[in-house]
Structures are given as C-alpha cells and as structure tokens.
Image (cartoon, rainbow, N blue to C red; front, side, top):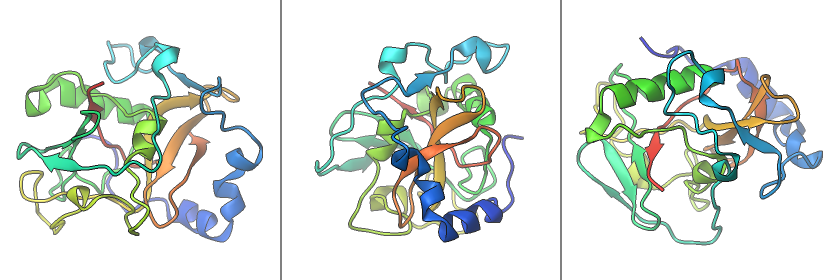
Length: 218
C-alpha cells in the first residue's frame, strides 16, 4: 500500500484559502530564486536506504526550464501515460480505482519517492526511469484559461469512480510534490506546485501529505 488515501488535509486547505499570503510567503520573502540556488535535489541516500531512481543528485538539473506563454499539446498514449508533444516529457496518468495511480492518494515528500520506486520496479508502461518532476516541469502543466484543475483536459477526462488509467485521466485541484528541497531549511521543507484555481508554488513541510504524479524523459 502506498501513500494515504483519505481526503486531503482540510486544515491546510482552509489556511491557504483564508491566508493567501501564507501560500505565497516564499515569493514575498524573495525565497523563490528560479535560476539561482534556492532549490536542491536530495541525493539518493538521503531518501531511502535503497537505490532511489526518483531522486536526482545533480543540482544543475534540479529546476528544469519553464517556458511561459507556450501553447502546450499532449497525446494520450493509450497505456496509462501522456506525452507532451513539445519537449517529450511523458507523464503518469492518474485514476480513481484504488491502484498506485489513484488520484485520491496523498504522500509525504519521502513517500512520493517510494511511489516512484514502485513505478520503476514494476516497469510502468514499459519504463524504469520514472521520477518526481522538478518544479518547472510541474509549473509547465498549468493551463491558465481553465480552473479546478488548471490543466489541459488530457489530464482531466472522464474521471469517475472505478475508472482506470486506460479509461480516464484524473487530476486534483490541489498541490503536487516536486523533487526539490528548499535549501533554507533542508530536511524540513520541499517545493510543491498547486494545480487548482490559484496556480502557484511554495515550500511546505516534508511531512505534509500532497499528491504525486510521475514523469520521465528529458
């Protein structure tokens, strides 16, 4: 069994609804330094005792590239994955069937890597190089012309109870973990991205339970 599958932390939801400055405190304080040194991916050994292919140790690769304003197109590959036509990233589809792909399951930051390990161990969709996305890869999923969730319809189609990654595509209008720790408090805070009506990103305690979507590719 992976993660935890009740409703998300409603106390966290309420605090973010009532205190928008809390959500973007990192931005206001100048903590977010994309292209700088604020982000760092934790080395494998710091995640689990086993080899963790979901965690990348190369700090130069930790942020990725964000291209605002680019129209993004996606194709459903029919095997439980979605590929971005531009850039070639392949994303895990999420379901509503109680499987490892269930979109209702929430994870601590460390548990997110455990899910990624399971995807790789099982060669999900024929691949063994799944990982947590970096913060800019997650931000790149945002579609600002739609709400709840603010994402392309390819990631949010026919999401009904019992549907699988072959019959639907599900996305929560909430927060998803990236693979990067906040270096102001390493071991305590990690970066996440919101995919709801208010599309933003900040750092949260690593013990907070959020959603996880795997990715692979360049």
